[in-house]
Image (cartoon, rainbow, N blue to C red):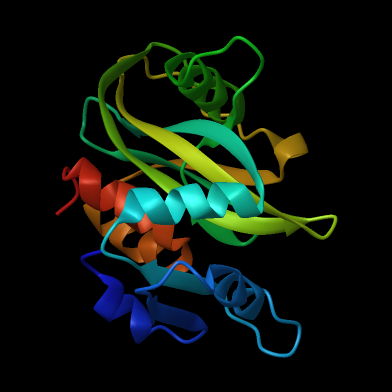
Length: 193
């Protein structure tokens, strides 16, 4: 992870350079400790595929998909949910491909139409606990274009209070109040300087 050094300087971040998968569950327990709060835990490992396989064994895998959507002016579509800026995304439904889910979720959460997928971006992973069980969430991301300039409508029942097309300056500001995975997706997009 190229910006792990930067993330280590963010308060509430635990960075672990992990060489052995034998005691992996101890790191997961530490990350979710009730005695110490970490907003994010970054685990560095020489073989990320083995690390992800271990995570999948510890908990349930949930798949989601979302979009980094640019309009004709090069502005990025962002949502504001739970006091953080985010990109539109959501869980895959039965018999739905990640591409189908990404378009559906962007349309539902933002009220936009006229979306097309340009290319896949690097998937992100994060964990959370639900009813005491570890959940590993894999989110498939896609660079998208929106050719329609219709009114943006936040999906309030999903906790979204704002939807905005943001210029580079707005995105840079929003990235100071977002999740690490969103920063990774925006960096992978490469359109925001």
